Length: 253
Image (cartoon, one colour):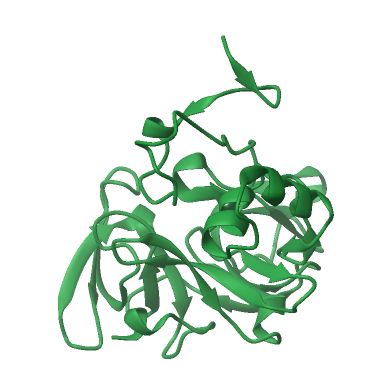
């Protein structure tokens, strides 16, 4: 079977609908490497550099400037053009100082939202699950594939473990220091990261729990007073009364 860069190729027709490529003009697409985001919720760095930021006109040019180290993702230079970039990741153009956050956006699914330099050092991450590791310490497994270890003094009384799944942490980049912790629950501000309501922002007014996140239904209300529903799996807490990060204009409406 044909391979690309040591991996099986991805047909363009099978790529996510929000990727900025012509599926009629090209047969193959760049397949993201296994990394911090799943394929259906990410985009290869090459397409961000060439098609969204337009720093290159061809794939070859994009691969070259990426390999030269001109782009950072979450505070670290990434030289792999197949690196998967997903929601809440911070992109920095090293030479110009431009900074962007990858945000969920209505119909487009994913956009690069310009952010100020001071905000680029912060990233909200959702807690996907927790595990207890050697010594009774707690490991938080986060939305973007990273882990944070919470050390406890007494495993029998882990008072330091105040975190629950679906809570959001605001961390520093690239150090991963926790700056703020926002619990999941009614009254909290959230953005939708999937489904037909992707990119919408609202306050949680009700949570109907079922077996599994995808079957659980969350009702939210936006600033216009309109209520909408989505799967619990798509709800990403971004603040209490105010968002922890700046939002695209359409998300504020």
